Image (tube, rainbow, N blue to C red; front, side):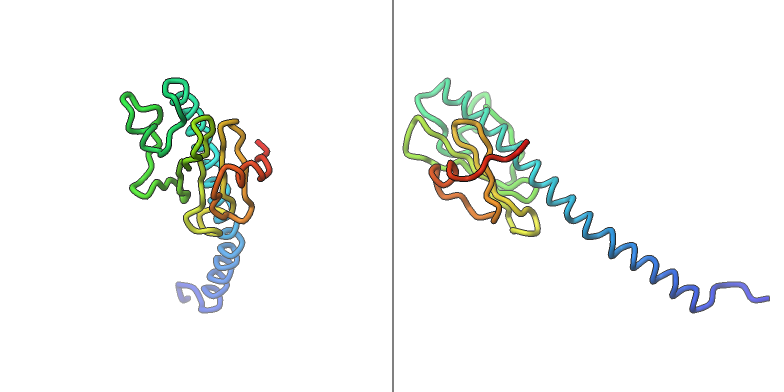
Length: 150
């Protein structure tokens, strides 16, 4: 009696593993995109709260993220890398040119890979989304977007 597996048995096992991988991998990628988008929204909510605190202590809203992180003590610690990125999103504060308004944005580093939607939040604290993942140029463009359902 021979010990071991036949070529047909090994091929069947490989085919089953390939089928399971083909089913599981797209679900895992979608889950990663969803997690990145949720994290981006949470980070924007934190930036918005920190900007409100900054505004209460200063005559204007912050012009850059470093105004919030570089203060002593810092208003927020975001844990962003050198490119202002975190979990596949790039974060920034856009100077609105008005001391009474604020705009923070998050844009996927690679649309379709790290996230599908871009997000923004103005001084009202409402997070809005652009379904195309495009950069949000100014406060007016942000205010025209639909609020995110939370």
